[in-house]
Image 1 (tube, rainbow, N blue to C red):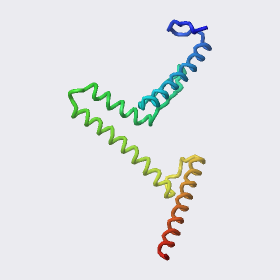
Image 2 (cartoon, rainbow, N blue to C red; image 1 turned 120 degrees about the vertical axis):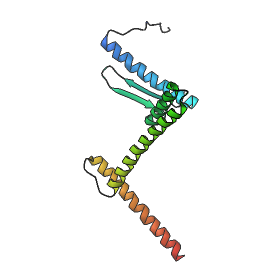
Image 3 (spheres, one colour; image 1 turned 90 degrees about the vertical axis):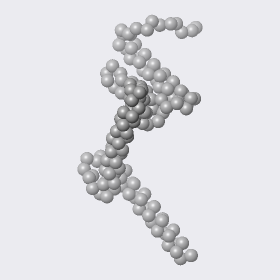
Image 4 (cartoon, helix red, strand yellow; image 1 turned 60 degrees about the vertical axis):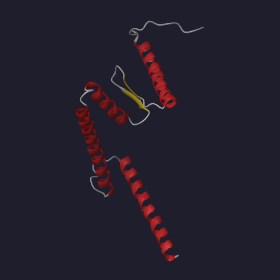
Length: 151
């Protein structure tokens, strides 16, 4: 027995609507993954439920995909004003680089034992693990360097 056609309209029964939302959301995300793999396409999906809950999936970084989308939108809106589009693209790149710089600076400060307030216990444990890995790497390098110099 095959599936029958349904009329595309709002489902009035709240439980049926939620079940349909969940199944179709999962189906949409599955199709997005398949499209990404089969066609080597960059795909991102953002879904907000009626309760405001966010569901997202991206074949690459969601931030990178959104940046590309915004650049493409700027070029579409002003196809003859390529210089302006290039400037907007550069300003987006500059703001992205500033954000990345601030994140790296914060990570550097934490590795030096500064600006640790506000970190969760798990984040402090991760920081400790990073520092221990760094110490082991330095010790291995020092031993290796000493072996070479004595050979």
